[in-house]
Amino acid sequence: MTSRRRKATPEEVRALAHPLRLRIIRVLYDGPRSNKELATELGEDPATILYHVRTLVRNGFLAPSGRRPGARGSVEKLYRSTGKSWRLDVDAGLPQAARVRAAALEAFLAEVRAAGATAQLETTRLALVVSADRRAELNRRLTDLLDEFAMRDDPDGEPWAIFVAQHRRPR
Image (tube, rainbow, N blue to C red; front, side, top):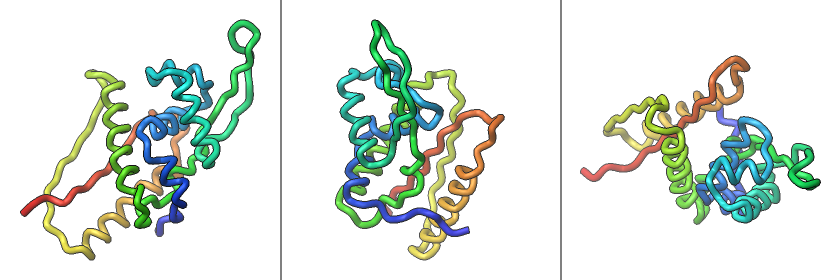
């Protein structure tokens, strides 16, 4: 299997370079929410959430998902994740790519903290010495495996998040 990801544009990379935006995308992957619900769930100010939601909508990472009655006669807009973030390669040599990687780590750590001390967390840590070619093969195989599982969500399954990171160790 080869990756179905395309190179991200500079605008898309900038949109993904914030941990709160990545958390919004993740929450909306599980189902549509209003701006108010997102603010409550993520512990943020509604105006802050709205700013980030608009950025994500403008760049195609979120889409409107209907409306419903809100408090005191208001109308709440619902948003959903488009899944676009998973189909992009943000490591296209763009200057903001490093910020996306840092934002992804921050977002994942915030999600783990929000899940609480009793949440299931599985980790694996490994030190390797590999050539550039073998590391490229490892990255390709990991991406293909994760893409394969992402494309076949189990309707009766439980929601999990996976974060894979690598860093070069000093010798």
